[in-house]
Length: 151
Image (cartoon, rainbow, N blue to C red; front, top):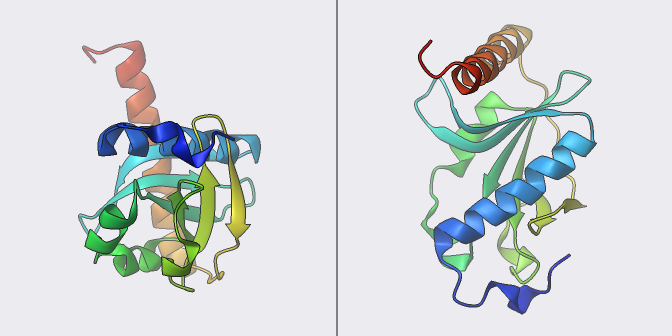
């Protein structure tokens, strides 16, 4: 993994993009499908939503640094839409800030690792079905748009 000092003058958006890429690669290596910028039925937007091979849904919120993390007051709203919530952070991030209700992924541009597993809670079967269908539709529409931008 990259060292914490690698970010230099890197902007917040670039840091977020770098960490999201590493987290998405890690999740894909686990066999998960991953959709970025996933809009929930509540109107909130997740940085990443992963559908694992066993049907679990993991929500991942990427935080570019302490300021970004402290400004986020909406993270607990995501718990109703997933089986586990993770914060994805840079290796230099102070992990003591991450609430116990969420897991921790530490990432760089190339990969991530789970430093703390998220507390599991199972979605209600009807919500799981709705979220899985939504995940599939969003992924399919994005793929179709990439293959035929005029569709």
